[in-house]
Picture 1 (cartoon, rainbow, N blue to C red):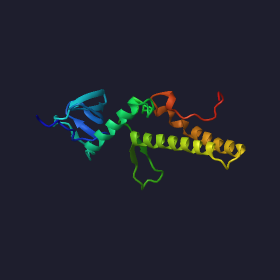
Picture 2: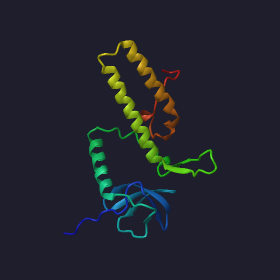
Picture 3: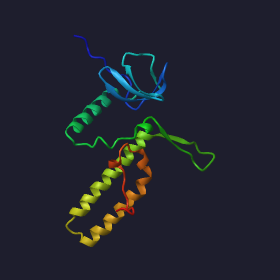
Picture 4: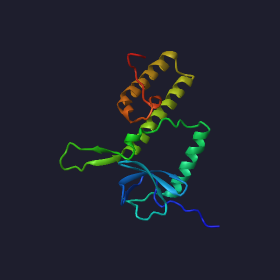
Length: 177
């Protein structure tokens, strides 16, 4: 029995395809990459040597493990799969342009920025739980601290455009609340 074909390019890596142009590896399926190109998602076989990574190829083995863990956690409802990045942003970058002429601009992959935002939201939720369950805080203190957290969420609403669904978006103290 032959060994299964494994990927050589990591998830998130930018690639160049001779027919479809530049794209970003989104996931793996059996023996294929799922790549987002300008004209949409395409499946490319692991064995297709003409598709080349731009820069570092990443760590495909670690990516396969992460993908498997995500699938298992999603199957059991332990992660909210609806909190993903909106499809139109996948493969995009955020360009940071400094105010000083002698400083280089920096491109940040939107996926990396989005993961940081999700991390902030998760840490704010944990902080909220700790405040609510803290035995030494008075009700007034809890309410005061929760107000700061709510205002933090409000400051982050600018980035709601990145989410694929409203359920994952940040909510501050709007008029409807």
